[in-house]
Image (cartoon, rainbow, N blue to C red):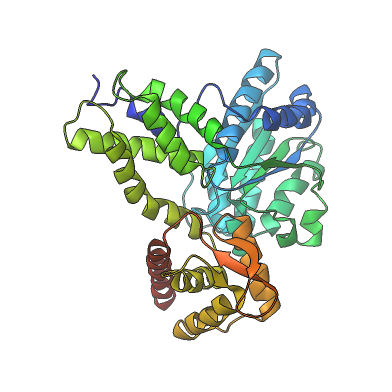
Length: 390
């Protein structure tokens, strides 16, 4: 039975994989071309999917692997796949354990070293005899923990013996290019051309995506195109489909809370305010300490103005480092982090006339209120410090 405005709220879950993916046709075609030799048998493939949060990387990989396995079965071949979120499993041992659990759900979750877990995984692949695709989502979190050697191990498995030959493929998913985080041995197993970019969605594309989800999840007549257009407009600042879907779900919940017959624009505005904290945490939780401190410094500078000069942010960053007992990075590394944060859509850099003669780089946040960003980062930094003390 429908609950208020919802017909099937599960269709708004991040775990839901739609039958048809919208506006990812180009990326899908590239995956098909790359994995066609895998489907035909006798070949392994390694691919990197790169893009900001909410650009469809994870859902595309899930739908693609599902259909690849289905089509392989129709032709008498067997392909198996499993996905590991490396931010949740950010050590080699926990990542290996998650992979092993695919083959043996009852495998004990402690008592084995990483080397022992590698042997167990290898034996399962050999015993199964099928081609296995391992999808490592948010793999940069794994690399930051110093476990990039795991990628080398997995990518070299097909070369270890005849029983493993062409039996393992990898799909790595990340918000950033991670080749600079791999050592040379691991890097040698990847073709730099095997990178598929996932750009941010436009407002029109987001409208199509949430329209399709609304049709599945909401009761007819409880929303209209004006509501969907407003959500798409707000989410288009980030090009983030996850944010748009989260806002649609939260808008429906607010409508239900007030016992309304449908979603209103005020529900959407309320959902935007409520969703900011979630999206901020989602975007910054995987950053390193220096990047968090730079965001904190920027947020402090932007509380009462639209832009801050790079030099102002750097001074604020050094103060934040002192507060948190962290040695500040040199200017070159500082600015490299600023550019990385801009690449992730967390900061925006533009040239403007500065406080001195000539042009200077200015930094701003287009998407997230400075106070919200500051509060979230302070909370994350306190949490990290607390864990270190234990």
